[in-house]
Length: 365
Image (cartoon, rainbow, N blue to C red; front, side):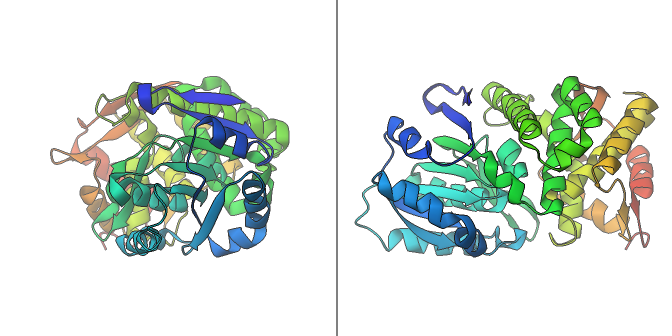
């Protein structure tokens, strides 16, 4: 299965496959360099890297391995600098190819390093988590976190290829599966009512990541993301803002939790439920949609409220996020399944009520 992200000269394919056997042919069609770096996590390389490297080596690709810690805290300028030092230490490579083999952290860090090394070298996304395959590997947003907030330092640098080997998804632990499913739920709300209904009707198959369900989840999500990116590559026309449904509060929760308490998907699930409740409170949607979304998140084992959290700390983190525009947070609010509105025109009192309901903890902290 091939889905194309249509960006003129920067267009690239998303390939959905059951193994890495087709990867060398895909690289050859794109005339990509035959040497470079495989950026990944140590445990992932030990578990799956040998088979991947063997496929590449047999086809004439030579890659060296660079590993980074398996944590959101690895999304740092220090990690990028370490990668750049390694790249620069192999000057004989005319134009290296960077392969990002891992989840969202690897993709963001390796992509950013590729964006700034020699003012940009080609890179390929080899996402290994559901969240990365359906969302973060697509679209060219690369970057790192700094103390002031998430993804505040970065660059747009489109990959030359996204290669989704869906067979790896069955090896994911339950928490990572649920985290990825949160982003799939997001796509159902913002663009695809049929996908939302599929998630409602097939929870056991989706949670088990059975092959047929995986094909539905990954293919439909990738098509949505590819279409949105094609309309608004650099997030300036408003279309891409819809992808931030749940992220206004979600990113603030991640920052307030120091990127350790919640996975990205868990924080986004809380953020989606909060945004839906805010939409109902402001008259954008009815309470029935809120109830369906909360019920679906709970069915998939995702949190719908942030317990034992200082809502004042979350509000402070929200003000530092890049979605804080002209002194106000930008919200993506559902009107109905498949349609959202992007607005900064909510009253502070409405937002405060939402925070008090959604973030249940120790007051203003």
